[in-house]
Length: 490
Image (tube, rainbow, N blue to C red; front, side):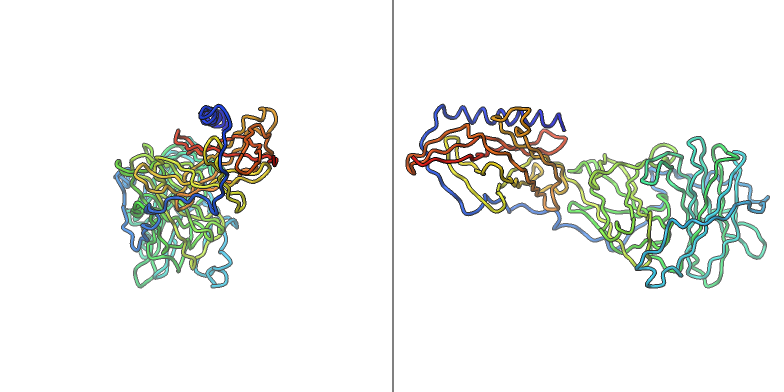
């Protein structure tokens, strides 16, 4: 911010210097007033008008950026010498059905239990079985921890033969992320491993879950395995990991989906997005609807490193900076859930800013554009609120939503230590690429004097400047503001 203020101060100083150079002496001019502010151009096509609603999803199982050999490690799991589980069941009251769900008896449609345990040797496995699933029910499992960068545990899901007591050796789902600690609101942790299956038959089925120590082991570091069964869920389940993400195509005006729910405390919905090389944006705005956010739903974007390490990418005002490539979006809950609530997930390109324009000024509805020696510019009374409006566009004229903008005002007649020399405010453009900020201006020093012979009045004002800049760029726009002090009739 200090660097921006310094650069803006130099920029505004240059503008004011050029303005002073336009005339050496105050000259006679005619004061005029317009009834409204200068209007912004309105013939540009708004990108939001092209926003599409995704009606159907196509699953992109095992995309190229995630390893193809998802079952390669299965040979290290001995399914023939199963031991009785030594996992300990525990209660986890942190997640709950939302009030809306409770009113619809949704608490009866999902049930869960959490178990903890350890694996004492690398390559070892802990099993939990049998887990029974009724026709039409959905099974989900989540592995959290152990919370050590030296350990890497994976999660596998198998069918269990209720007649023979054997486990089918072919895993029906697995999650094999590499350990990588991200910073979440709840603390630092590696992305949990998640698997799921739906019983599409007409009879009861049984399943087995395996926690496998791919790297390292510990007699002290616990892992936590949460199992949930649900009878009510959306049509796209299960998609519990990035290995089963659905393709999400973002068009120029943005895309959204509103047909999915978070129906249990460990439900994870995954989407794959591809950023093309020929894009006209450097970031994507990823946002959930306000009701879902109030439930504690999160929409996170991940990049993939070697070994399936999932890296949580930072967001600023829901903007995520993305290069060319494939990324994954995870939707889940940290608080409440509801099988009846359909969340809306929207992704919009944050178009590359090519220019910024200051379109109008006003002061709580007051518009005044007199012509003094330095030209026709907006005039405001000292000690008033200056409202600065503008737009950010691409080089080809498209309006840029959600662009970060800082506006600065400068009056060189005030000293640095006065606290009145500068005013700044930061904001983001709205969905239509427009921004508006309010600056509380100080009193005018009345340093400039101009006699208007046609009305027999001498005006005292400060010649000040205002600049708007797209943060992180050199793209800026400037204008002159007359800060009025008082007038004297001659």
